[in-house]
Amino acid sequence: MKIRKARLMLLRLSAIPLIILAVFVRPGWAADSVTELSVEFGGYLFLIAGLWIRMWSILYVGGKKSKELITAGPYSLCRNPLYVGSLLLVIGIGLCFENLPMLIGTLVLFVPMHLLVVRLEERHLLDLFPETYPAYQKTVPRFFPSFRNYVSQTELVVSRHAVRRLMVDATAVLLIPQIEDLLEMLHEKHYLPVLWQFP
Image 1 (cartoon, rainbow, N blue to C red):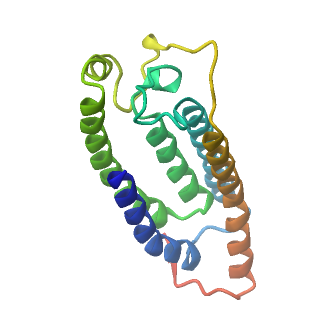
Image 2: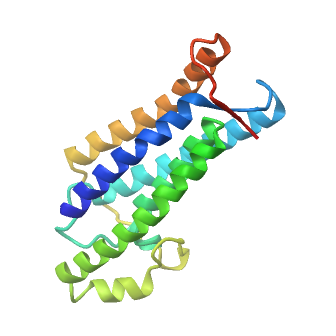
Image 3: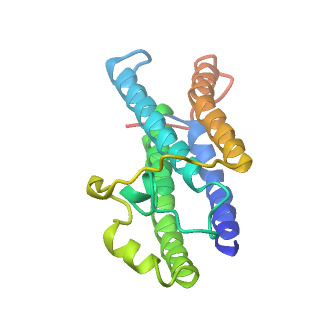
C-alpha cells in the first residue's frame, strides 16, 4: 500500500511539467498534414491497445491484489500487464497530443519509476506467496508477453471496484483526443500562447 501511495504521489508531481509541455508546446508541422494525421492516428492505436490491455488486466486482478496470486489471462502472458498497458497509454497520449517533448519526458519519468515499483512489488509478492510466486516468476516473463503459457479462465468473478476502475480508465482515455483538439483550437485562435515549437 505504501508503494502504491508513493507511486501515485510521484506521478502527480511529475504530471505538472508534462501538463505545461502539453499546453504550451506545439509541433512545427502543418495542421491536417500527413505527418499530423499519421502521428495522431498512431496515438489512437496505442491508446486503444493500452486501454484494452489495462481493462483485461483489471478484470482479472481487480479487488484480488495481494489476496491471491493471479496467473491466468493477461497474467499468464507477462507478470505486469497493467504496466505494459500503461506504457502503451503513455506513448499514445504523447502521440495524440503530437508532442514529442512531452512523450520523451513522460517515458523518462514513467519507465524508471515503474521499474523500481515492479521490483518492490515482486519482493512483496515473494513474501506473500513464497511457495507459488518463484515458479510463476521463472515461467512468465516480467514485461514482454510470451504466448506459449497462455491460460484462460472459464469463469471470472469481477468485483465492483474493478468495474468502477474500468469506467474511470475508459472515460479518461476517451477524453484525451478531445482535450488535444481543444488545446489545438485554443492555440489556433491565439487564446493560448505557444512557448516553443518543435522540431
